[in-house]
Image 1 (cartoon, one colour):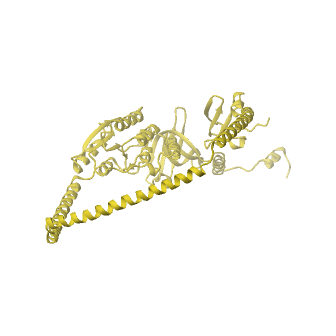
Image 2 (spheres, rainbow, N blue to C red):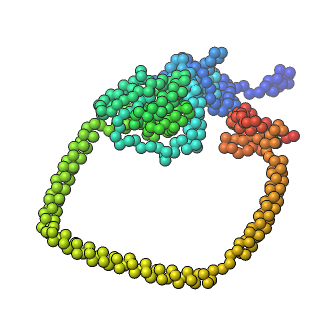
Image 3 (cartoon, one colour):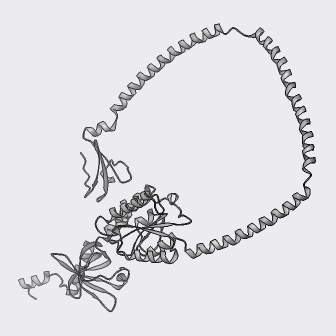
Length: 453
């Protein structure tokens, strides 16, 4: 066989890949290059296949990407997205080999902003819990008998109708005072806190209900604000929180004295049913009648016994008069005898004291002299100690960290208050506190690059 230039070219040609092999290698390259990441966008072209898999397009203003979420993952999503929904997905970037289409395999999905809200919820919960706002020992018990109930909610809320219906059914005798406040939207948290403080200041109810119906985490977010939690903790009236459904949990639930699963449950906890009170009163009245009859019977028997033992008043008075005269004579003797003996002893002791009384004038003069010497010695010692204290104070001022801060330095500490001394102790996206000469500031680290100078 002849070696021609063309045969040399064919011999050096690399192996030819099939399309399937090429797509498989590209898929592996994408999966290695992009680990699981969170991606935000808008749902479009959503399809739910008969197999339970979800197929949709995730897009923003400038681009889009095909997405698939298999049934094994979709069943744990908690909601079914709709066209136009803003979502965030945790996905693996890959390639669908059969069509050669670049796509993402979605592992988890949530509504846009829910992740940040939940993280904010956890941070505030940890902060307030660390400050003792949720401690069990500060929780107050509900009054035994409720005469008036306050309600903090929106006048248009369905939760208000549920609460009023439950209270009319269980306790129609209880007065109800509404402290209106919006339960969602901008500035709703401030209005809710203001209504709670108004109820506390007026002190016209025995129990305060803070409630609203169910909704998404965004709808309930007003009850996750710090101002509402602090208003509940500072309220002078026991507070029952009934926010959302049984599965909804808010910061207000932790701050309240009692957490109810729903607004209706809050109303049931706030007031004992009128029928129960009436039954209890009837039972108490029956017990009281029995006790009165038993007491009257025992009193009659005691009166009969005393009547049988009663003596003639004249004979009793005569006996007591004789007894009184004997006691008076004995008392007179007992009073005068000690006085006479005491007078004799007092005269004897007065004579002995006059003979042995010391001359205290010289001792008093010596005591005054010693006092002057002691005072002079103490004044000298105090002056020496004061001079030493001034010297130590001057040295301490030289070591004062505030002077260092005033020269332009700063102290960086983490959320636990620990001072940081090396870049290795700092992590990206960590919130740090920087203490300066005239106050402090919180900063968020975007990246960390160690530098040695």
